[in-house]
Amino acid sequence: MSGARWSEVRAVLFDLDGTLIDSAPDLGRAANQLRVARDLAPLPLSAYRSMAGAGARGMLSIAFGIKPDDEAFPVLREEFFDNYQRCIHEQTEVFAQVDELLSVLQRNSVRWGVVTNKASRFTDLIVQRLRLFDGASVVVSGDTTPHSKPHPAPLLEAATRLGMPPQACIYVGDDHRDILAGQAAGMGTVAALYGYLGQDATVTAWGADATIDFPLDLLKLLDLS
Image (cartoon, rainbow, N blue to C red; front, side, top):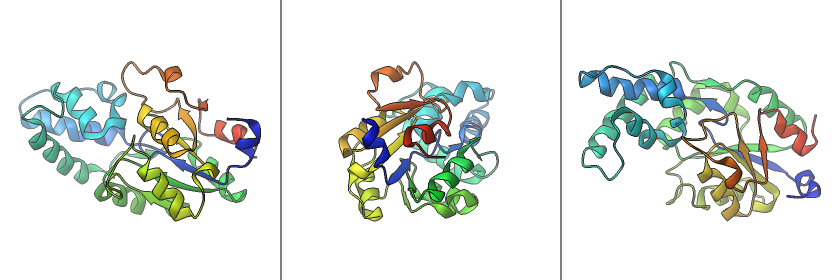
């Protein structure tokens, strides 16, 4: 992505978990409640953190070593969802520098929003709890459109709601699916290296237009202050 293209960005769309908020403690807690209910010892948060961006799929893979095609997965997933909904507000926090980043974007008339694979039943609770999201111009959840990332539909829906062409937006995320979705939507893409990334992630192979080590690094790309 050329320097001129970065300067033409009119909106920034963000993934949620691992990009704007650190929800790993509550996701890990919900998974550990499943283990304790089955007389298994809870695991340390460090065991869950790298897979927190994968939601139920990631948490259950760590907690029980199962995949979505496992016969036990649907029941465990629903129990996990119920646990998570009850503890969703306990330890989830906004990442350091995110408040300042969003303030600078708004001060420079760059609109911002959220595109997440998290279901709206959870996204809505988080948006209501954290005042940070009062400034969001758009929030698209995993069930807002018929497809979720890496399909481009959620990102294209966000651009439509913003009234902007996809080329005027960039997408920032910490998962390979985020970069694939952004590329398919025709947006510039930024990989957030401070996020969860996933186990054994090779971020250099994702093909993102840029990477950032900290949220405020995005301002350097956009030449904002």
